Length: 152
Image (cartoon, rainbow, N blue to C red; front, side, top):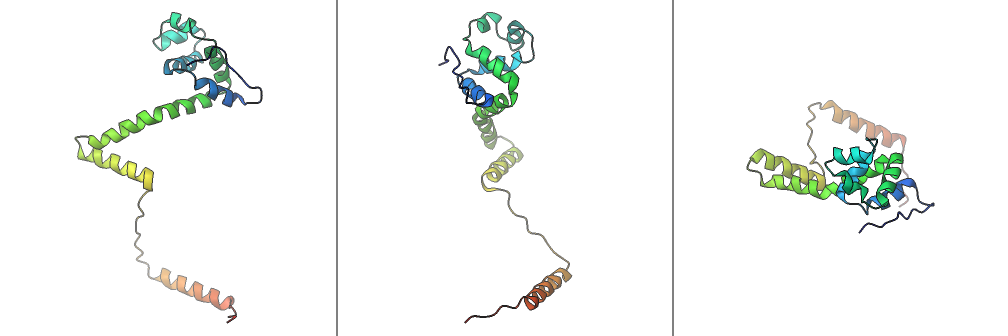
């Protein structure tokens, strides 16, 4: 439910205020707030996103507050939209597991596994046997330079 008035707290940052306002808006209202940054009038912004201007004119004052706050902090709006879209995006990604194409299923499965578990480590082959001798020599030199006294 949208509150009629924005309850801005002077101790909150504009980002926090904008986040609190955006939590109260519908998706269409957020789309309008974003479009309003690019257009000179409410009518132009409404029409640009396929809404009737009359719809926008009857929205509560909190929409104008969101437009005002977003003019100062568009990043908060972008992050808010990303968070709202995450579940839908994951549903699309997971639906790829049911694709008719084996390559798509494999790719999606790999991606999801790597998100959860991280990438598998790949063994590396070292054909340069001299590297091991250098490492052993380094360790031996270090031990000789740093003898430990045994307290037992």
